[in-house]
Image (cartoon, rainbow, N blue to C red; front, side, top):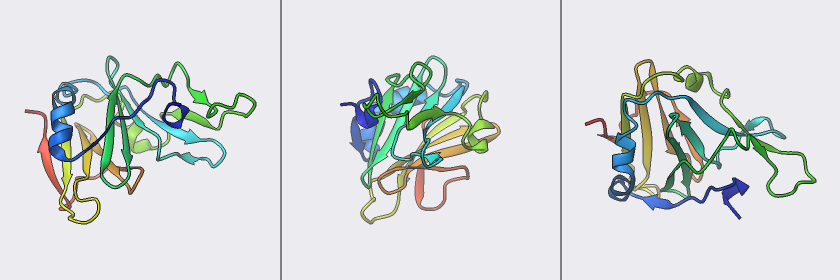
Length: 175
């Protein structure tokens, strides 16, 4: 069974700046200059909230980046495996149940405001915290009209819309 029963999605867990940069640095860098179409989040219908455990999907038209944080320092970055338009809602494999999950693009106005803007930089944000999440890496996306960061919120995804604080060391991939 696929992760969260999302058809075609199988996360590949990585940890640490070097491992993430080696596996995905070039492809992340290639996103710079592309226009953000949408950010898709999984909406848990029953509770009326974002399901933070499921992937955050950044749609750049010809490329879709899927980000999922897990445990304390693991992240999966996959590419073009989730089609939020082809299967906009799903039911965790039980067709008798109403669909409890659906992809949405309109949950946070901060993300919606960035749609249509050209990506200026991707930042790998290395956690300087030396505790249990010491090798956590967040991903920052910088646009002319703002930014957002997808980070590990202790075994799930979190979103921030401000400049990263002193807890991170920035590694720009723009060049």
